[in-house]
Image (cartoon, rainbow, N blue to C red; front, top):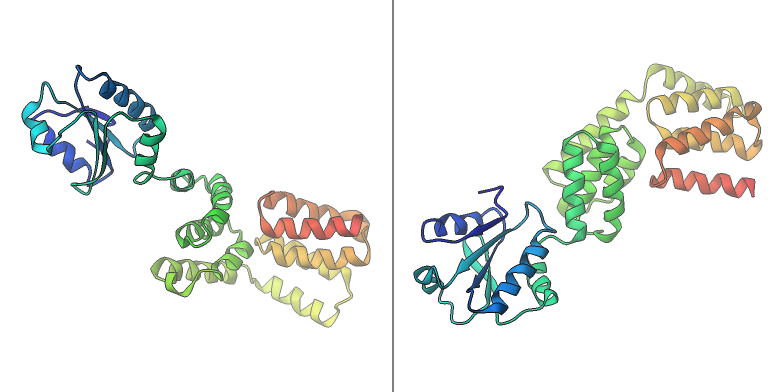
Length: 284
């Protein structure tokens, strides 16, 4: 039944159809050939449900051919539309309907545009396409600022692609009430990645730069090392420090590496956007 999109209800399958509502909403249109309005409603429902593949089941009950089944539902007029969820009637309307009124009914029980996009991003992440998933998560997160599910899914995808800086910044915004099992797992994952990004070579360069803060060669080398372990915010901050002193530092190599990192992070990355604006301020 999970793949079922539209089904004609009979006395033999009625229990199975209602059981399907335990997994997803089931919309039942009670109709009859002698009531043209009910046929029109069914056509409108088919059009609407087609936009939610795999998320809702459309069932039809011919009240003339299945009179006994219709009586079980207590249908008194046609057309009648009922929505079942969790095995129980959840909503319904009777009489002739417009596409707008039907969409309003279904909107109370079906995912909205952002929820559909969230499902799409989750599917991409499951397939290992984390970068495309990140693009979608970033797009819908501002519309769902209180939904930690979206933020946590984005954090996981960022960690999978080792975009540690953005993941850490976002993890800090998760409210206390949502810091449960998934949050703790992501926090541990972040810490492990950060430890992996703090190699002895990096520690030595950090010590050298601390002793010689004006040594641009050490600063550049450390920035490159940071970038190689995806500590891109740290890398960009070092490179920006050099560019503030000299836009052509290291014969232009500093600016090139800076732009390579920003470009690699992508247009939607907030860290990339932050440092891109800083560079434009220096240039213009």
